[in-house]
Amino acid sequence: MYTSLRITLFFLIVLSSGHLFAHELTPTYIKLKQSYVENVLTTRVNLWNGRADVLYYKLNVYNEKWEEVSFFSLPGDVVKVDYTERMKLDVFIGAPEAANAVYVCTRSQILKGLKQKTVISSKICSKIIK
Amino acid sequence: MLKPVIVLAGSLIATGAAAQTEIVGTVDSKCIIISETSGVYGNPSPNLLTTDPTNGGVKPIIRYDVISADYYKAKISYPITFSSAPSLDDVVNWEGGVTVSEVSDSLMSDYDTNKITYNNATEYDLTIAGSTWFTVASEADYGYAKSLPAGSYNAVVEAECIPL
Image (cartoon, rainbow over all chains, first blue to last red; front, top):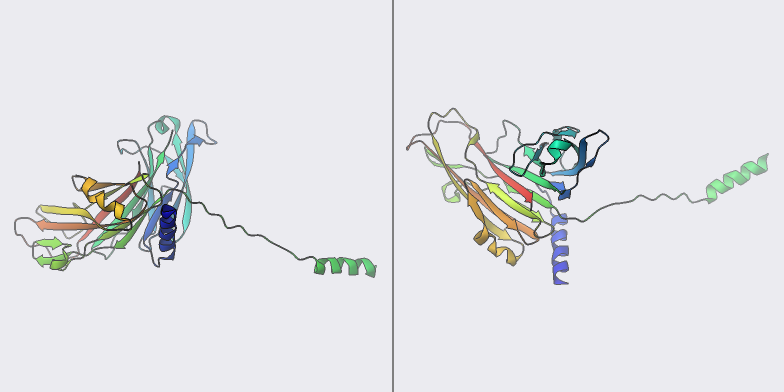
């Protein structure tokens, strides 16, 4: 009961917070399924942009050693997501590459010429479960 | 002719049109990275840029919110290059570190004890649900007591949330 009260309070604090500079990617664990193209698997992730200082995010797929795995995504691998907007990203991976793919990640893209001295680049990943 | 029209009009007026709009939401495990403070480099001496508050700097603060315990690890890397800077003709020596500055649950107090540090990265297993604030220190020392050229210097802290 104490744990559920704590979680509820946490939710209230998060939801009632004012101006957040937040980045979120769900779900945590994703599964690949057959797409409408033979030998191509697909999955979907949901990106939420709570960062007023960031408009663009780059999608990438990695293997266990954090090496990039080739993929295709809709609407693209670099997407523009306005502040407080959500976007669904469909990821397509060829069957041979899918065997090695482990993480699907989105990283915030910082514009050139930004005046801040230090900037935080956020990257959140979802893990592919076989 | 008039009677069917009256009946039809009456039925239209009498029927209360109702519409239902759904609000859908799900609660599932997730990690949210929040950039609370961007950070500023102070320039206490001609060769040094630092986020140390005693030298005019501001340390970046990053907050991680996790809904469920043991689903994610946090990996935070302090800068080891400038993302933009004037032309530099000597080596820049980078130092830095990541520490837990605030927690929403006292059980998170072990995070700093159990963290793993390698190169410029620090990893924390987020074993407790809630919010954790991480403070990043960064220092750039140019050459051997050499003055940094005038201009704007930017560096990037990388904050990652990786499912376990």
